[in-house]
Length: 263
Image (tube, rainbow, N blue to C red; front, top):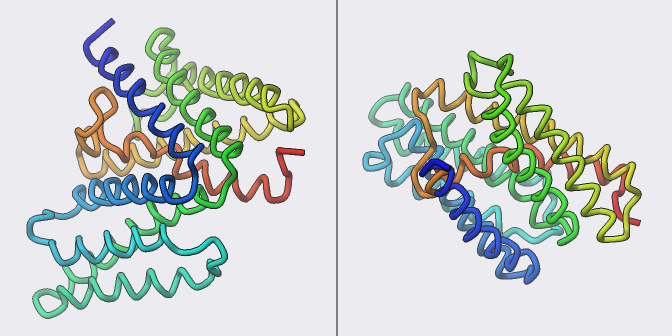
């Protein structure tokens, strides 16, 4: 086992119990944990585009808006979120407009994309029940883990070499199979879901999660960086760890609204 693999496993062994405790506790502990993750991931995303030392005011505005979204009540009308994001991006534009209008427009677009990418996509997680969070977290983690190890050992044709040269079709299919297996067993253990429906929803979660992974890979390739950060040894940055979750969460929430998983 390589040093990178040992770091990856050790980091997971530390983070998973903390994450499980926050989910079980719910309420304030979960909201604090998600707010911290959102702030760190936002910082990593913005660092791909900005020199944060020269964008301190804009950074503070985006972090404040992003964390603020995590504290809106569950009853908050989501249609009111878009105007708030527009105001935040507009304020960032104003902080730079007196110096260079083109840079100001660039900063405003970066700020808006950051808010849409991280806190807006994370927010549905605060409105899901613990059983749902367990399902989707197990699904994304099993997809990521199996795709990494199956792809590393079996190799074969590349999934999308221009975006992520290391990802293979064998790893993708391995991640899909692992997600469907783990999530179906979880549903059977919970005793409140039809195994067939659980497997189908798990398949959607896995495909969506892999799409989120590829999306972040495309952003990093565009910005010519390997990892979004170095906070998690063996995994990279926070954004590297939650990229799959960011896309899977809202899709799962929408899908189970029309096809409830739990009976």
